[in-house]
Image 1 (spheres, each protein chain N blue to C red):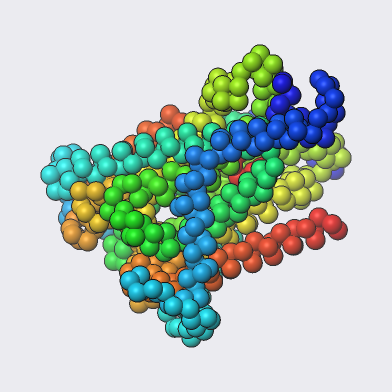
Image 2: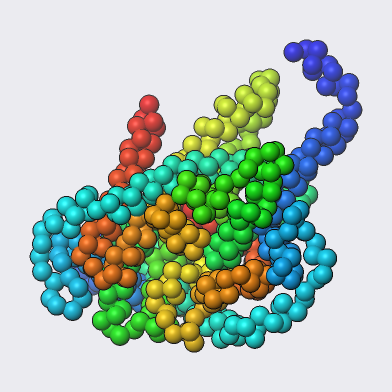
Length: 313
Length: 287
């Protein structure tokens, strides 16, 4: 009875002659126990996550207002999607955001991690400082940064004024609203990715640095030869996480600018919210959702493919 | 090369170290100051009279400190209701997430059965899936179930996440199977092993998951924004956001409210910092 759980079905029984019926009942008991552990979470998970995900795909081929029965419309929603100015703007804005946010956050996080990856008094405090913006409420962050970006009196433009630069209206300017939300997002999220980089740095064996030092390398050479390759798996992971993060951006921008001015900061997720939950065009909103989902999936796959190819070399 | 090595030996090691350290600390402090600046602004503005918030040049230390802002705000918006709702939701969701997550994680990490790994991949896949992609069908379901504008809707959408299962499983995998084996020999059943061996051993991971979930729920904006319409049901984040709309020009009060919304998180963070960092490092790295 003791090997009830861990014995694999084809391991020879030491207790008795292998009897097929008994073996099957062991498997059954294990399955029963396993499922009983998972079930409380699984029921909630299936009902609240899995069913809506499947519904998203089904609804994207339908037209539905929520009252009358849904009707099958084939690819109509998708055809509309690529002709819809608002949705296309949202798509471009999302890409714009990603192109700014991903590299900047990555650089800031890596810089912080390299700076704070040492055993010194007070380092823990500085790490905590860098991480704190990430757990600060988004609404507070949005309100504060909106004030910092205030066109007339905000500290950002006062600071630029010292250098003789007349700062723009930031969140009130169609050109500068997106850079403003990108800066805010980078400030908020860099601490999180710093922690991932720190964990990555600590996983690099100390002996490699010692060996490189013995070889007479300078700090920059050690960085190139040991740190960069050692951080490759972490950088890859961070890149994926950041890209996914960039494509689902919504709340921070929504609270800061409501997608404006005009549609300068309208992103895909907000477009989904607007057409689905506000306007009640469930079919069309699901089609935009499928687009968002596909983008995230494709980017993740491309990155995995690149990484796989690099590792084979 | 040899000359530099010689020179290096001639400079006293400790002096070089002191200089290096000083430069490093200067860098640390500069970075920390840059990161903390928005918080400094928040606190400073929260203690000013409204007219003093935007001045040229910036007044970092208010010359007329308005401590009463922190008292006044309670009468301007139903702060008590908002805080009570937020605390309630955060505690219930955290409790369910930790309980069902750690329970399911045991099934995934320590019990072998057919289909287990396939099921787990399904869980992982949905973590990568953006919530925004399925929020509309989820919302329709809640409307049909008549659950909009109830706390139950938010509890349901946040309490059974795959994230908790994933994080706890990562930790359980580091607990040797021999330990469970020994407990089985001693006659404990699987539920007993989970409750009496695994749970006590995984306190740090439980703390990580609990803190991350609590803070996420506390700070959540979109969930309450979509589901909670009645002012009596609002969380602190919604209350704060509506404050901008209603009292558009009261910048000092907006900052006072922001400070109040961040303060509980700051306290929790100071106590549980280690667990946040552990939780993020494990859930992010070993994926």
